Length: 346
Ligand code: NDP
Image (tube, rainbow, N blue to C red; front, side, top):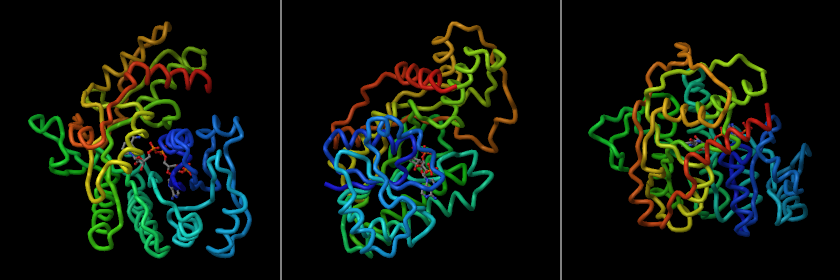
């Protein structure tokens, strides 16, 4: 079965590719010419990344389709260049691969960047998804489509509203969160209007090896690894450490994404998360307990956001009931693996 992962070069996309290859799927993914391929290095080192039509001019869907048939390798992640903001390239990829499953992960995924580049965030995330859904319609296929929504959609959550159910009000607090609300509403509209089989997840924060260094867990882990190697003074600078997040391992989350399409219902929305919240400070202390080097923590006001989501704790009952999913990886292991990831890289 052919699956297409948009955003395969990202943290979740790369883990999902490995998971799906292990399940015997034929994996295709989109990359951009400037994509960092680091996240696929485990697959690359075992010869399991295959660039189809790398830099060759592609005439049309039929031409790309021939290339895909001739050059694809079933044991590899087959990559095709495509940018979500370009309807032509998305149409070609979808038309040539004709996937039976689409995991739509590509996005401008960093909340702080959405304050600085709100229009780009909305364009990439909302209009990019529109182009993908239209490409599916135009190809005349009806794959199961996973849309990666986010717990950020809940935004302002009052203490009496946790754990957060799918029925909680959505009060987004950043342009990123607005883009994710719109992505989900668009997908459900396409389900009702055109019968597209979209399943939406609202995943709570997930972490692990390959997490971008701008995200708080990864930023702290990287700083610790740099301090251990004497590359930085023994001080960690943090933003607001009182906010609470519900963290799950990315490897558990990509398993959930797979189950969302296999067992979830099109047109439905599912929370995915561990169901335990923890302050950023507690997460920081867990990371600090994994190093022997003494480190001082300092608050850095420049890291505070215009409005921050203060409390996220997931009620995952609906998803667990319908799919049987359970998180398996303890958060302590996630943080250990993340720190070890940075120890190998700094
Ligand atoms: P990453 O930032 O690691 O990956 C984002 C991916 O999107 C990259 O492959 C990136 O490609 C690609 N991308 C960005 N812009 C475009 C574009 N214009 N055209 C094509 N591809 C593009 O994110 P994650 O893996 O962490 O997240 C995956 C999805 O899950 C995202 O939609 C995110 O919003 C969502 N999500 C993530 C959560 C988390 O805690 N990680 C929580 C909830 C939802 P490139 O390599 O070229 O930059």
